[in-house]
Length: 269
Length: 311
Image 1: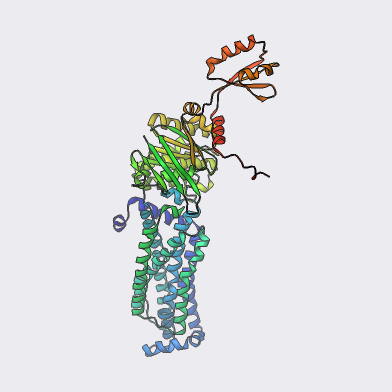
Image 2: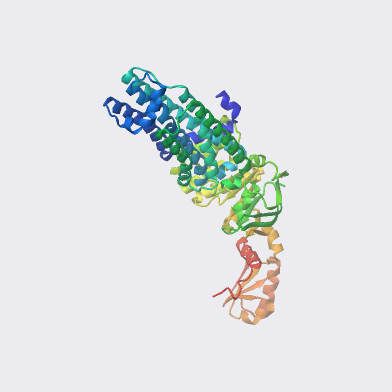
């Protein structure tokens, strides 16, 4: 709270709280923000462990190349542990990024384009908040909510994975350094990138749905990364995550600075 | 002077010219009616005077502060209610006012007290905890008025504030605006195309048409500026013989309109007419209404439709 007080004026905080309450009260915003993480961090991992328990070998056959590389890195691990490690530490991290991407896109679309769609942006422009302050409050508000959802998803995923792995082969495997880098370094960076994109879209889109279609442009590279990872063409490593996060933060810095410099009240009407 | 506008113009990237060469002074405590049809430029003018849109030419000063300087400072002293600045439908009336109170920098206790007071005055107290999406049009409009008044502005811009209100609520709002101007010295700029409504409430008027301010002043000043003399309306069976001598024009087949300088001219004119043998069944002095004047001024400034353009 003290950090908030230092960063944001009471007026900016009021704006942030309003955005959060509005999101919580709107099914159109709330449903995708809860359903996607629920599927990604609960349903799919549970299915993985159920499949392993029932002796399914489909995953092993379809990802044989990747599994072989992981087995070389960890020769002592048994079959179930290798499969779980492949899914949790190699396939899932990229997939997990869909949670902050989706949450940040939905929040930012609601926060920026939703205001425009409902003709409420003009109401804000008549207050003593500058456009820069409005943007700051809205970007931070969308970020805080998106990141909170990502952190909660991370925690739930950890519980599901650890319970499953403990029951399957008696070990706690989550989180490792790779996941910590993902949640503390890459997730904030990619969340801000999605918000920047929505800020850019907000000047062009007239409706929330239209803005949501634009968010596909962020999802697409993640899907491509997932395909690369699944095929074993790209091996996810700590260094790759550090580099990806740094690249994304640099891009965020440029895009946010540019958005704040270029924003004019006229573009928000 | 609360508002000084000099050579103000606004055009858009599309090439559309919304305002051109506006010069206007509005003194503190004036109830100013900015009149014009839809699309005349009223909302654009409010947006420019609040720094939401940047002027293309000229500028304005609000209580001596340059509009181009610090818009946030302008927003502290102005309150705005327009159809294009909606309330948050998902929040309750009270929550809307609390949010905007905070955004205007008011302390929470002050926001609560002021919101309560305005919700009572505008008869929204029993609906304060209802979500705005369940409000009627009139209730939303009253909430927007409350929102515009929340931070005790010195200038209030209102776009059709009583449209959609029942007569009782409209009267309440009009009384409130009158009090604000007369008792508290608030300058009220009322944007409307309802001329009779403006005439009943405002003391000064500006006629805006196609982005140009055609005229402005009090009704008396405007009548003088446009030489809008009162008209003596006469009815009688044998007035045709006297019409030319009186300089009158026929309103219809039995009503003759005779222009006069003022009412003191009427007794002598009637005596002359009766002495000349005219029978006068009815004589009525008709002053120009704001509506008469508005249409006369607009007609004078609008170009006549071209012959080639008509089918």
